Image 1 (tube, rainbow, N blue to C red):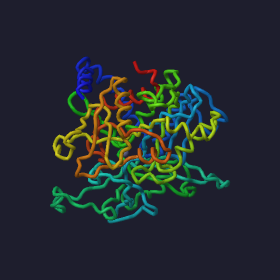
Image 2 (cartoon, rainbow, N blue to C red):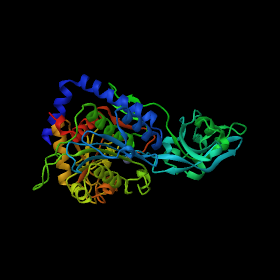
Image 3 (cartoon, rainbow, N blue to C red):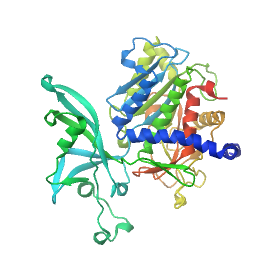
Image 4 (cartoon, protein in one colour):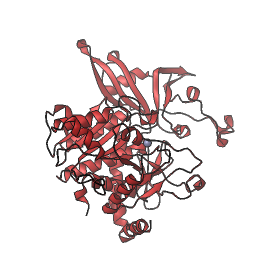
Length: 464
Ligand code: ZN
């Protein structure tokens, strides 16, 4: 513990200005990523754009794979797997797993309504947003639309983001005197963003215009409301980043940047597992894998969620294209390692009694290792030890999180990926305030450190 504190102290005191300047570049790129990734479909499209620019090719186009190959796969528009093939053809994997969806308001079928001379949209709550953060601010609307092409009747899909901004107006305090004592928000009555006078254009017209297709050709859509405002740097010296969808675009971004850093370095991943192989095992090279799943905020059970067979199927496909047999694939899982990346709760300075007495993560304190006795996080002693070693070797501080023993915590994709595959791993993430608020706040240093430690994980040769 003392070593970690000293390490952090040295990193910060040696060159605090440079550290923050460099880290702010990473956070600016994160902010740009978040602004483009307004829905899970946009997030995966943006990741695909960056991967293609770095020379990754679709897995579906490959008939065999060799060391150094870079492939990716997009499933159902919102689940991404990207792999850099390591030096050894053995199917052993260094996996970073994250989720690309965020709590939101989802547009219902037949949502366009007129009330009191205004147009408004009926929604359902997606996941667990802090609802009162959605009122009295500009709301964007976007997603994907399915439409038929000309006479062929062929279905196509387009991503879109409307220019129109929506609003959920609060009640005046004179009509809602109890609001500051906490008032329940009724999703059916109160979560209908307003956007026009009754005689204004309807939603179908706006969607058709945004997608650039004929309104009559539209057959269906998946639309979500989101915060369109850019991220802000807060705190003295701009040491914190406040942005929408940090949960869990921070982890998608960190995993992607780590993978791209390894690709840009021209090195093939091929290091051993952090801390070496398991007692009695062989040293083996490994393939760098990023897996970003959708639907975590609603339980991960969909075809593009972490509880599906998607990751297992994609890994097996890569193994077969490398010439490995099924027995090799199954044997390789035990020698692989999963870093399940999702956010953690930082101690709240005004409500610190809600944090565990011993584990009190801070913003800009480094990646957080998350543990729970009920195994809602996969972290065990081995996983924590290996991730701790990785952080030390990468010159990155780390912190610990566990729930206050009388509070029920959250969950994430770690157990859903680690159990069924099965493979060992750890649950980690960056610390934030106000998880599931429309705007969450994180430490600028933390994202840079997280990118660095994940890059080290993918390519142990990069560790000094
Ligand atoms: Zn999350």
